[in-house]
Amino acid sequence: MGIAVRVLNGGRGIEDRFTDDPERSLFQFVLDAPDTSVRWGISEYKETLFNSKQAYQLVREMDTLPADSLTPVLRRLRESAEWVYKRTGYLQFIGD
Image 1 (spheres, one colour):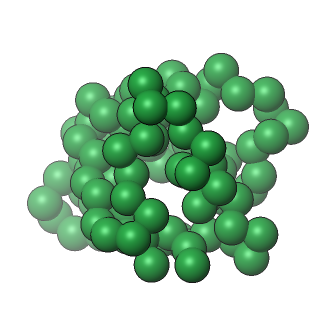
Image 2 (cartoon, helix red, strand yellow; image 1 turned 180 degrees about the vertical axis):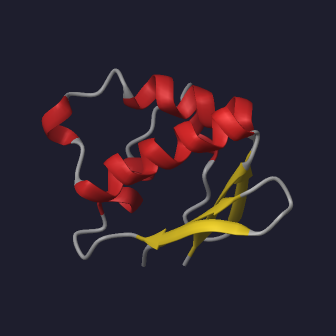
């Protein structure tokens, strides 16, 4: 089980892509989401698409987490979400 992420460049293709780490920190990040969090809407088993506003909310939520809880894959997700927000792209989550 894991979650893959694609950073979509507003309909012009895939800007970046990455997968969860062996410890499944992204998967756990989604599972641990409170139901008031935007990440609560990410499906661990199907496709989920975030627009730029949802990506911005994800950045805001991630900025409230302790820095030491952000694994390299979660830092990459935060950077990708910020990129999406600034360029009106999309984050595509693919659950497995």
